[in-house]
Amino acid sequence: MKKFIFVLCALCFSSFVGAADLKLQPYPNAREIFHSETEEDSFLLALSAYKKVDDTWLVDRSQRLGGKLERHTFELPADHNAEAGFAFFKDQIDKYNLRELFHCRARDCGTSNSWANNHFKIIQLYGMDQYQLYGAYEITNADEKPFYVVIYAVMRGNKRAYVQLEVLHINKVDDFGVASSPETLNKLLNTNGYFVFPDFVSKDATGGAHLQIKQAHIQALVALLALQPKLNIALVGHDYSPASIEQQQAESKKNANQIKAALVAAGVSEKRLQTFGVGSLAPAGRGDRSARVEVVKVGDN
Image (tube, rainbow, N blue to C red; front, side):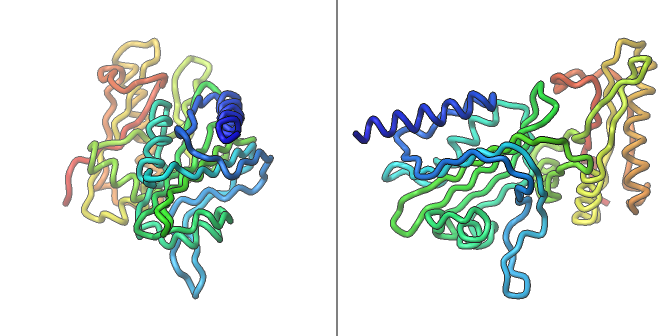
């Protein structure tokens, strides 16, 4: 009977991820204790840890989104920990065009009680603060409307681990944008030395590629520069349009200057910003983009 229930849950889970085109696999031998499919018009995507404000635990960064929401709560097999549960699903979504919005672990996430009772409202997720992980991610594919994936894993005092997996396929692209946290951007710069400025690229009547800048991404970059007051960056434009290299370089420099102008208008010192246009001379990392601007760490004051 137990085997039948597990197979049934696995089939239900597989049908969900197939419909979402994410093709995630269920955790082996895990027990799914909750599952729901709903249309949400005010889903709270937490983009920071829970902090205590006037005796109330709140997130100071979040986004309200609407769309089709799938929620799954798994109890992992005995002797499996929260880290393994989180990594199992994170490794799968890493195969997609993924952008990390926020990640925390242990006490940096705040209290597990806040996540379990205030955020997810699932008592089984109330565990030990030092054994919890949370991540929020954006996945884009051929569909212009992205998926937002949330993974929360925790171990309870009885040593049983639980994973909350939520996938939202939005109804409408947010005009303001959903930005990565400044802490995440700082981590990317320190780890990789750069990150791709995440904005939509459109083409004009002549085939030229232009950035459509969303204010949330500018605000996140401004916050990063405020968080690291000695940080200097280069904005490096790339363009892969069917044009001469000189035209590509000019267009890519124009895109980089567009972001620079937005940052300066938001109060960032022009001395901290450099712009370059390399056209199509750096094809590595292009992916399916026709143009992009990279934010590159060039040193500290």
